[in-house]
Length: 406
Ligand SMILES: *Cc1c(COP(=O)(O)O)cnc(C)c1O
Image (cartoon, rainbow, N blue to C red):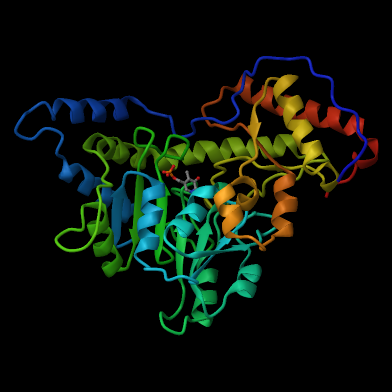
């Protein structure tokens, strides 16, 4: 909302807490041992870096962990999502519904595979795709619902599978539910299932910022559909013996380190959840802030610790708050994520005429100050203190809204 607020005078402080952490960058002696073994075991000209058995072991462990029949390793979440969508063989006009507040990657993948992206609104509390709004947008052209477990909060996948069953496509039957779990590796959904066990296919990412990482890049797809698993196997290695494919494999060293990271995933996530819950409790008395929901049972892994400012601070006040946090108190924060169609030209052009006002409003109130389980107590205290002071600084500029909590 435009107001004639004065701008905040800055004293420029060096950023002591970065804008965002390399979240998965948490290797112990066990990861280093695995790396050494992969390297020393590859110094032979007869075998070199070939290591299908490493990748197979990682895939088996991942399938077992998530409770799925198949887990297939890919070199990135982006390519894996493209290949899952490719398996649908989308025709012009075929629609894929996805939440407007999202990482741009899955939306670009839909466009890349020839689908029509249909934007939907987020749930106002979790900011995950809203089932009610999704139902409004389901129609005879819907081929897939693409659900992102946004910032670590689990979406209710079973609910979307039910919705899809009620709105079958005239040729292909019920739309498939594709899950983007790049930020939710190790979580559980409301049914108690591990993330990855529900829906047609789930895409994970092991990029450097994610909850576990295989040297900064990597991905896994889980599915119970044997046909899809076969197709994906072909797509990632030159079509197997028949169709089109390319090379999207994970390396031996990545698989070796992935096995160790997977074994440590629950412990790493638990530390993150504790830190997030503690931060939420510590900020609970700041009336201007809407804090992330405190959920049990791994229903929220807090990939990011989202804060929402009052409606009256949307966009401009939020931007000032981030500015004050960084320049006055040295604490970085990002907007993760903006509405994809406002931030990316290809998505904007592709979705011309579509608007998600609730998503725009929520995204304009959103900021995510840096959170990581490995931050020291002092660093965490600095972040909390900075948030408290920066909010007070902004509130002082606009006393009328200080008590509002939109
Ligand atoms: C990181 C991320 C991706 C993409 O994964 P990459 O492995 O980096 O290609 C997709 N979706 C979401 C929500 C992400 O956070």
